Image (cartoon, rainbow over all chains, first blue to last red; front, side, top):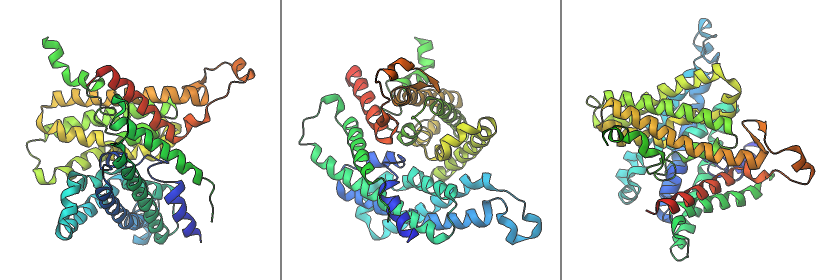
Length: 204
Length: 203
């Protein structure tokens, strides 16, 4: 029950894009058509679902103060938490590399349309952000971390697909010239954020 | 003429090639830390420091890094610098470091840094790269400070934590605009800045 609540919360209320502005760069750059946006969203989901439990294990059994006590008594006082950032980014970069190979092999069309943004998932802040939030919130087990990862990923996917759907229609509208392109996209994202705020307070 | 040529990498990113509103990089942190002025300034200093140093280091190593693994090398250099900044900030100003929470760690994935390393530091000498890093850091900072100025003034009636809107305004029915504190208004504020900037530059 608690996990379901966390799942719903991370999709709608703590949405990566609208509540924390994470992953904005690729969010703005790849949202020009729905198909590509969907592909990138699924890739981000995939990386999040794998990266969160892996980083949870790293954090619990290696990095936290006292985490090394399973290794021997004399290591019980060790605190490696300052190494967290480097470890997490290495895990994420490796996962993205694997994902890139898989997509190139099985979905070459998607691979071509994602282009440079596929390797750049490694520096997508939504992923490192979710890992850092997980570290901050002290989830009690790896399953909760996975649920949080899935929720954040689906929230991001939902956001980028809906923005892409709106932007596909923008060509037919009259927009003041200086606002065209990136300006109007910002405003739309802001309005979508306000719309998403209406989910505040939902509890299961 | 000569002088302006030397400082070109420093001055260009301030307005004409601004990383946030023209190149659209590093939006995430630019929006998230701007509810108050103080965290915005601290964030600017951190990003400028990391960007300038990372630019110099990568520029020094640019002839020895194999192209195929350059992203990993860049990430490790940036991550190491960010860890240092994070530790310094925790020791020096714990309150602000708590407010910025994960966003200091997220400097690693700030697209401005990767973007400048890829586009500039890999092909230029260390001194130019240093200027480019400082310039882009400041260009990023200008936007942060402007957005934070409006959001804090209109949203909480304070600047840098000091009360600016006098008490008699509140007595006569003035109210803080709570919307400005919320995340979506940051996007709309940036959109307005882009609007004015494009209007002025006309290209």
